[in-house]
Image (cartoon, rainbow, N blue to C red):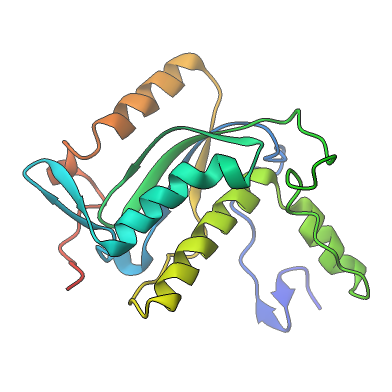
Length: 189
């Protein structure tokens, strides 16, 4: 079996930087809904008006630090079909609490390959995965139509001027919605 196969099916290689472990640093993250459907609400008169899913997603973003003690949300915005976050992952945490290493799952009785994959998932992926999972559980429990785009986009923020530029972009994202590349005509009804 090739390294690009999983259960004899093609496996898309990771988009993450191979030289970085994603267990510490500042990141600009974008998470989109599948097919860019407006599940989170609409922008009306320059203001984001949340749907039920949008309100829950907003609360989940605010709750990330309570569920991931190593994560701090520096700035975020929930848009109709995507979410932008500037997230700081503190690499100083140790495993004493058990909450700061969620990617180290128990694989007793499972193969070494799966343990290696679980150990390679960095704190950023674990945090975003938990967030997406929480929103999905909510929508399933309330029989709401919803789907995430697979994966998420991240950018490692390496300099203060880059952080400032991204923070300005996130802060003004609602006001610039008419020109936003994520503003598509598909609207969830």
